[in-house]
Length: 159
Image (cartoon, rainbow, N blue to C red; front, side, top):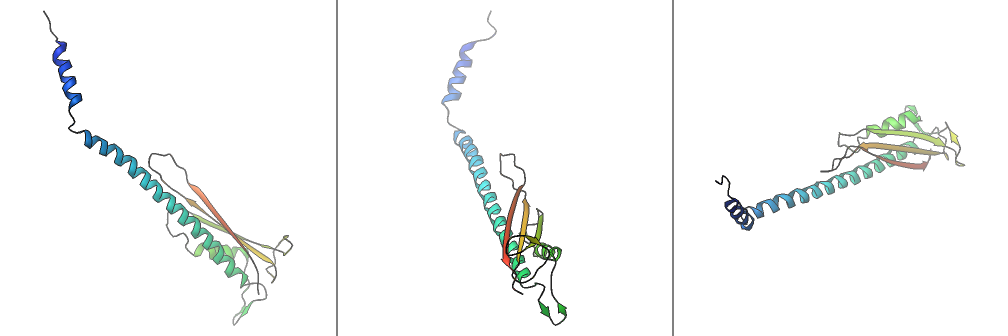
């Protein structure tokens, strides 16, 4: 007495393997998931590049601001000389890169024309503004950690 016949099972496997219904649905699902993963990855790389450019702009703007506010600068209200803390606060207040999900930190330092560190923001000295931004990028199918983007700008104080 046979309880289980192999022939119907084999015929079902042959029939299942030869049918093509649903094959295109599976191939589209697999290819779309890979293609969308690459697309969103490219978008994240573009956002990272945008943030890097905004950090560069932030450092340049703060350095431009600092070179016009040296210790000989005067305005109608008196001296307009800045400290490194005020320059860093100005740079962070610019609002770059304006995506709201990362943190921007800026520092400023004064140097003599020979390269020695100084606290004086006299004309002819250099001001260096460095800005960094922690960019939390997310690429599908990858374990990613935040990326720190940095930029620095150095200019000669004019007044």
